[in-house]
Length: 433
Image (cartoon, rainbow, N blue to C red; front, side, top):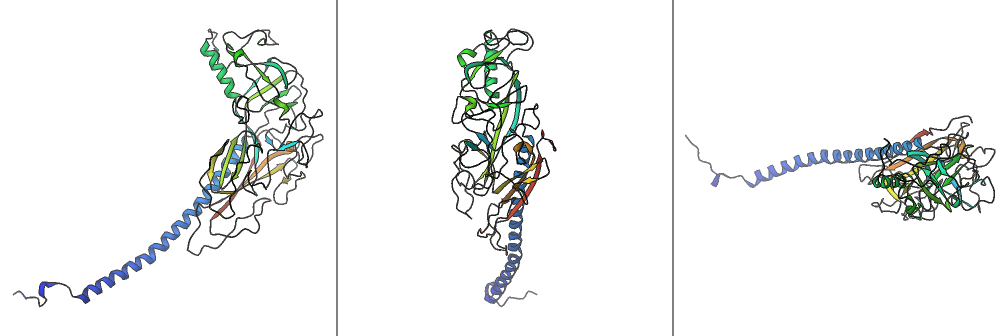
């Protein structure tokens, strides 16, 4: 027998609804008390991993580049200092060999690598800058005509046949064009922003190992229209075989008068060799970005790092002429130099005698801190998380010291940081000269 409910309409009472709502509220509160701490923990872990990955990626990349740095002159021992560039003598030197560069005040030398930058327009203050040479499909060319000096208004003919036929068949205008384009590419034509028609700095050395930077300033396009099909015998005759060979005529003037290797010679004994395809690169940190420049650091044109207030968030990347972004959230980049005697310069307990605290370039006999005594480089990178940690009891921390750079009294914050070091040996340097 059915029983009739005493409640009109069969609904719930207000008390019952309130009990259910209170129960649901208690359940949601309990779930939230578990969920939000887990979310904060996951975010903290993500930021920690982010800082670690950035430091590891930056260190691995820089160390890989340094391991590939090379002098490209295998005649002299100790090697010439082209693997890592710290200074260059600017202008025409008054003597031969070129005077030494030690970073002293008033020296006619320009600085290419820095320790603990103080000028905020060059890089983030306190970070280091490194300039080095790396091969990129490098070739060794010999001259078909040699005017006797690397700095001359007379043309030089360089034997080059990368775009010519190699099977004995006839060359065409297409081969001539391909050969000219290949020569322009391997010499880095147009890579100097200050001189779009020049080559990148190349290297020339003679049979005694004397070397100099060689920069093409006139590619003589009108005279190089038939480098494969009909090379002019006037400057394309091989001096050893007497055969007319594919070659290109160029002029390097003023060429090396602007860039001279300290301690190097300006007089050369034939035969001479021109290294093409050797590129120079520079590394720096600017506003939280690890940047790379293809070319030699130039204080006059590379003072394009905008100032950033201490403790400020790193801004989105700002395009700069000549520089490419590699990784964001890099806070510090430091280099320490490992010498053949087992000492370390510009590092904890390290010593450096130059005024700029980077290895000296040039001079005889070798100074203990001469760049030719460097057999390796220790790279240290400090990375930080992209955002600070909010909540969760994160302790205030400041940027840690790295090598000889101690940020000092920097306001602490809640960013996660990770620091990593890696040591790379230069592939063509040996200990114990």
